[in-house]
Length: 370
Image 1 (cartoon, rainbow, N blue to C red):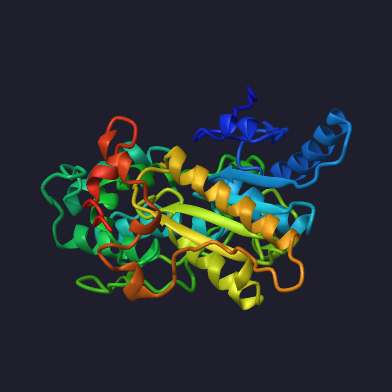
Image 2: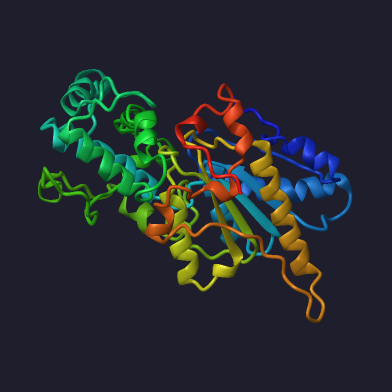
């Protein structure tokens, strides 16, 4: 069943209060179908303007998770159609997300001498319990005692490096996500690509660190993508590539400890954008949370305000008027990302008082009061 959700994080009320018209789409199909998201969202924007009876003065695109993948590709599929973009917890690293899911499971198997490739139908019931026990993961809980053994610690460190490097809350984030990541390793069902993203995944050229106590770079199974055409094409496939060529202001939010769509997605996108000399069009912000898309209305609302002010300042430049490009975080410098206070600048401190709503904020030390 396809349903449409109103914008979250208090954005629906904010849009209406500030005089914006908003529209949302369920897309035309389910599953991980980015192509449909790209084309139907653009079509929806055109249709909304027709319904209103006048062209939009500005058109923004915002979304979360797979919606971030949709946004990243939309900015390139329809250059300058949108005036600004707000992808949050987004899959901006496209196929490398599925490489990471594959790597997590292959490394866990390698460390425990429990090979299970290709994924068997009973992987979660026959193999994963053995893997968890051999790594000391069975009793590992967020905020609890560290039950990992030497091999479990190696998996945790490799996972940290695959998902963005040393950063605040990395060990706790692993405890949150360690079991869920096994569920993302599933057999191919013979259906379309949108149901079988694993066909794109590979680890042929992946270097894992740390490489001790087990020399995993020598022993881990190496896998090539089974659908090489979809992996390498620039066409708008169901799971397309993002080149990193935005032509309009783009502001992102990402949780530091989100290991479902990890922080490394931001780093991949930043490198691609920088390589195409578009650095000035991308601002990124780190949030100290470990949930997937765990943001507060303040964090998202502030990002929206800063994005729209930025876009409007570019539209209104006259003579020596200044472009109001907002502040962001450096996502690439390892020492910066590893700082104990990284992510504090844009994290809403009031979230700590609402643990039932923002369940993982308490896993991070409170930020210094400036």
